[in-house]
Image (cartoon, rainbow, N blue to C red; front, side, top):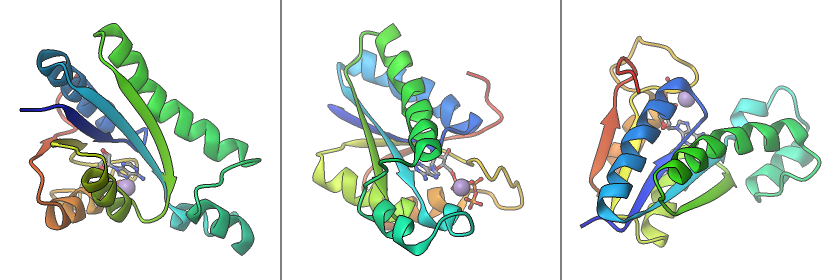
Length: 153
Ligand code: ATP
Ligand code: MN
């Protein structure tokens, strides 16, 4: 049923709770987990120049140490959990608008389940769902498991 499970992560606590669900399912199904961190140029619009923002959109993060470190930390949580469960993991970092990248990655990489957090690093509870999750649910046709932040791993 599930061979490729996508876990989009922004490194937030809620995403890390979702990681536990994704990896546990992957272990039971013998699936590969894909950890996808999207660098959103809008997060960095105030701190970087337009040339650097263009490079991010092209997926070129060289010499942007903070960006690379945040990405490696977020996907590293997935990689560590996968290793503990003997699950194969692919770590991927891309630049662009998160829900667009997540949806197109899922289509292009034969993903059959998305596991995503209800909220992310902005942590604002004003809405039932964070905007990335809401947009992924609207734009992807794939089964998606939404993990709430109140659940402890
Ligand atoms: P908002 O961004 O709308 O202010 P939020 O940060 O609380 O609210 P979302 O951004 O929708 O909520 O995050 C929900 C989930 O979406 C996260 O737990 C994570 O799984 C995924 N996600 C969010 N941003 C990214 C990203 N840049 N790359 C990969 N996954 C992401
Ligand atoms: Mn967010």
